[in-house]
Length: 569
Image 1 (spheres, helix red, strand yellow):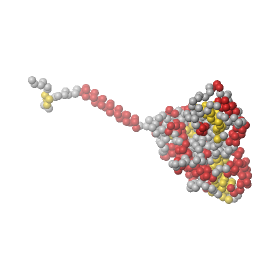
Image 2 (cartoon, rainbow, N blue to C red):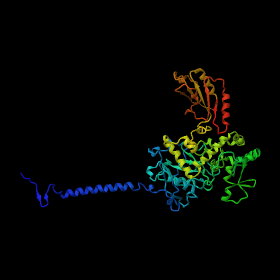
Image 3 (cartoon, rainbow, N blue to C red):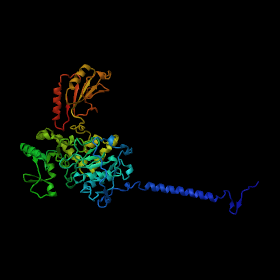
Image 4 (tube, helix red, strand yellow):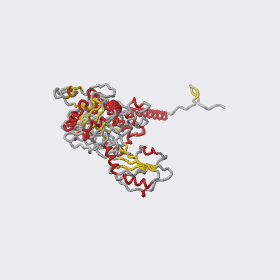
């Protein structure tokens, strides 16, 4: 039997020749697939938005080359800052999302020059050297992204560090014109010199909607705890003058005051302290016999004798930092750089980065009305503790104050820790210098303290099953006006506390904590419910104390220097 297949001159035709119309179809299909791959590649590497192309390089930060943006008179103005804003109400954490590095991404707006309809700029200074350094540091950090779609936080290139140079209304209009403004949601503004004459508000006066504010002069009235960030007022001397680190220990002077333009009442009080304590206190002022200029700004005088500033600060154990027209003072940075322990007299001032820094380890905070008692208060601090504070003061400056880069990245890290709390830095990482952090034993002079969240005191009552005596103690303690909260530590694991209806009626919150073991030391546990600095630890059978005695103890605590934590009882 023979095969019936066809033959040609080239041999058997085992596969029929593809018809022309099929060949065209496959060629077309292949071309479409190829074009699709090319288009996908171009989309992957092509900028996704106009904003994302504006990478922050030095060449692109020239104000002269920035595009001109005219602000119509009718441009919208943001609302004044919302004092009720908190991270859970005015910040969209979902923009930050999850990422393996637990790090927020920060986008910096392209530089633009905003002018009004007459061509007048919104700022008399444009982009300052300090703000340029700040933006440069952020753009060089791991926080930065040039992809606006990936950003969690937005920073305008509008410089508002110094309110004195701003036109308030026009600056607010410029904020509202930013393409991602959205009532200031997830926007961060940096301001070091807020307010203006005659009132000098302690927060930036520019209306800013819900934007976060990193401010250099917050008071307890304007600071939104857990939302804003209190930052230092940068001192230009940090970049111009190098002070070598000096070993902690006794110095030539005990107290030194170097600020100029101090209010006459404060200066009068300092002069009286000088008369009482002689050479232990050096009271400096502006030099009147020198010509004005950069050189005179680095000089201080006392009775015709000229001292170099800030070098003279290294000759004192303690240095006075008094409030001026503004609460925040650049002198604080100079004092820390010198390794001099700052004596801060500025009522209601929110200290820089106080959300994470334990200032009791590096400073002494004294109420302004206690200025006359300053010398005796400082003399009560042990010498070894003063040396620890000198060392800590210098380290605070090196880590958090020394440059605009340090200030900017510390601010972003604080916000980052709020958004990713499970990956946040610990108290030790924020507050222990490297030489201390790796030591086997930390200094026992200091405990991890944070500013109290509530005034008054918390009563911690340890009890087992003496209910009648317990109720008498609660009733007596509740009569103390400064009582903030009652915390009953129930140490009996075999018996439940009395029903809620049986407890005495008191005018403060009362919380019962049940322990897992019957230990007397349970009264000293740092319970989360304790929000005050003063704590009264008492047993359920101590019924001889009167409310007047307890109130006296709390009033005594209020007059103890701010560097020493207190437990009553």
